[in-house]
Image (cartoon, rainbow, N blue to C red):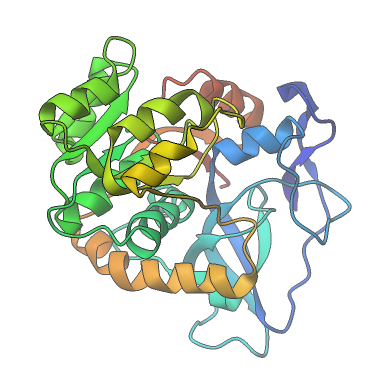
Length: 329
């Protein structure tokens, strides 16, 4: 098979699309012929040497956290699928390749309404958003929520999950008015351009000093103080990314006085049983919504997987609204 390989950490020059050994299919696994995959911020960090893949490591470092494709081989202990069926899901590594072996419990059937590109754009960001808002934060009807990076994959997924649940109002931040306009089409009630507005001040004004019940943040350190200010008493913040860095000074008294709950989340580092649980919970919640069109993936651009360097540079430009998909045809 061919695969994206990180030959050297650092710039995109360390990426190559080359021959690699076919993966072996274990007794509890599916061997999938990947038709499309997608690029995530974690892939950028891994390329830079800042987000190593979990153990056990393979001889070649192949990135990629999600996939969509056809089942070529089924392990004898796998049930619920047939050869040739379309499946999608998350994986700890190896998704940027023509073939991938994944635990059968991690795979989901692809709704008929979705093509390969749409299917590949869903698993990582939608499972992350659903797990963060529903499983971790217990977001409910009438809860207010602030979603940072509303034009990112996670942001777009979180907007749709929050909208379907009945959260209100939904605040969203982005770096351009055009991104905010598209975010409003998906369900954002109040869009905030972080280049021209202080989101904490906007939240304070709109909520009349109450604050928001939940914040989903991918930015991290640079937003810490304003996030704490924007949270309501007994509010919750869940960190799903650290784009601005990992270190921030914390006023612990504010957390105590406002009785805040702060947590972090990541899918890749979890044990298999927790990943399976997150996948099944998302599958039950969202697959009927995706099939009916009430929830939809948003794709900005599709690159052929051989254009992996160009895809990385495009993601690093921060101009995309929606997912960057890699075609593996």
